[in-house]
Amino acid sequence: MTEKKIWTLKSIAKELGVSNATVSNAFSRPDQLSKKRRDDILASCQKLGYSGPNKAAQSLRKGHSNIVALVLPDSVEYMISDPVASNFVKGVSSVLEKNQVNLLLFSGASDNINEVADFVDGFICYGIPRNAKLVEQLRATTKKVVTADFDIDRNASVGIDNEQAAYEIAKLAIKSADDNIAILGLRLLDSNLTCRVYELPDFDLLPSITHRRLNGYKKAINELGVTLRDDRIWNIPKSSHDIALIAVREALTSIPRPNVLLCMSDLIALAALKEINAMGLKIPEDISVVGFDGIDETNRSNPPLTTVHQNSEEKGSKAAELFIKRATDSVLIPYHIEHRQSC
Image (tube, rainbow, N blue to C red; front, top):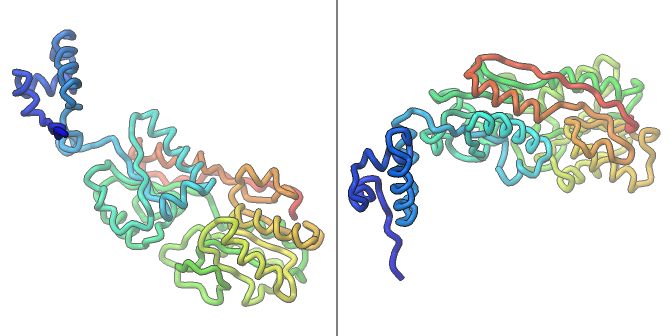
């Protein structure tokens, strides 16, 4: 079997008996050639299997690639299955495509942004990456950076007021100073374990959105004079039904059983609703449940879930707009509480 020849600009020009500039113009500067001459050269290149000048080399010469790397909080496999992250990516994509800019998904568990830095015009970072070293690399890079749901002093960020939103929904869920509360947290610890949280790490310098939500819950709890037991906060490493169910079952079999569940994502809250129903308990008479995010499924759950609705697609669109405009704004987008039948 004959190996397919790998053509370069120089070798294809020699094969066609034309100059390097003529081939380059046929691909990149069509106004420099007659239509017939350009069509003949492109047809010959296609027949020989040459697709044009090296794009990476062109990008280096031009100083831009029309590619943006979207740094995700976790692995690409996990994040594309998460409805909140998927909506954010959808918002980013819609704006970039309109501006003829391509999107590269980059795992937040990767070792180094420098693996792709030379090939992209900059970074949009959605949430604090699982590999915290990437945050320092994003601070240091000379490329454009826009962050979502956290800020690294690069003067371009977008998010919602997570602490205030959590405070508001907790005040809605808690009815009495005698309530027994459990908090089902998301990535409160740098751990893959689903476990109770007795001591939080120092996150004063770069608090995550879930730590801000925890602050909001605690503010409401303190204002309402409720006692939060030391063993009633759980760390759930990923927002998925199966993983959340471990913490949900622990919480629901605790003594005394909580009658208010404050959940840091809708997927966690939906797992709680399903388990509470399976136990034959009534919602909200026996247990009130609230979520966070406002995904579509919350309106179809049994009962419909009370949740903080944040527009993740709008957040993604705004992040991309900040990038395209090379803006230096810190933008807070609105949220609202969907008060339904779960509390």
